[in-house]
Length: 157
Image (tube, rainbow, N blue to C red):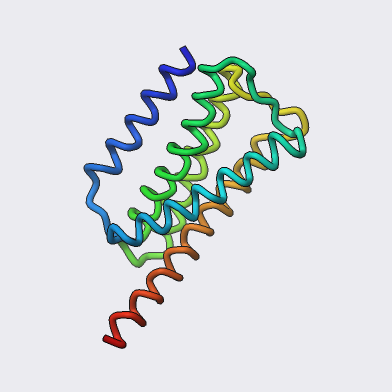
């Protein structure tokens, strides 16, 4: 049951990203996705494997659901948030989209604990919210880096 729920969530998130109107180019989306993927994988492996703050299941399907969340759902939701955030210049629009993404990602992680995919030993949802806020800020920084780099490349040619 847990695998099917997270498979559906993965399919839903990818479908939303595929049909939405994107503000970022393909190169910018790819760069931000890869940065968020690297940060997400490294952070989750440090928290779960090294520090043992989160206990992961030993069964194959729940662990696959955890991997889908870590490797697909989180980075794509951050990309959706970034494309929505860059659609308008208003500060409250950007802050609202970041807050919505943080709440949504924290809710998905709470769903993981409710379905016994992971269990918090020395961790809590507040730390998840801080992590997702920092992840969204990392996406904004990665976007600004690639945006500045592409502007310099275009101006010099």
